Image (cartoon, rainbow, N blue to C red; front, side, top):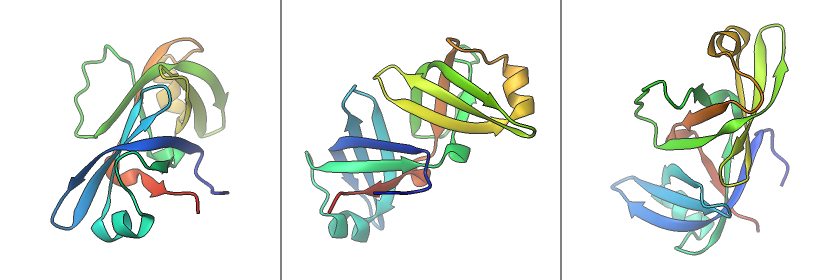
Length: 142
């Protein structure tokens, strides 16, 4: 599957929490990291999602928020993944930051150059990535 999303994670459905309109889908990645998505019940059915089934989580890099682990930040986002800065690719306005997650996956974030500078990001520095469950697109291989 080819997409424009910089982040594509394969995992197994570990939980499905049904709601009135939307379901909350939890994927567990091979390294143990967990990603939560909110999708419609119709999507859960049409994708054939069930506990233990394989699925893919797509997250666009601009939807990822980065923070220092000790910043004391509390957000309403369902997804909080810890890791360290793997690479930094600065641009004129934005910077791409690759984060090596504790479970072994790599996550890409696009943040402003100003934010990258003010956070003092550097390779090897611990970082936390946040993104909303509604920003996760779930797919399955046909």
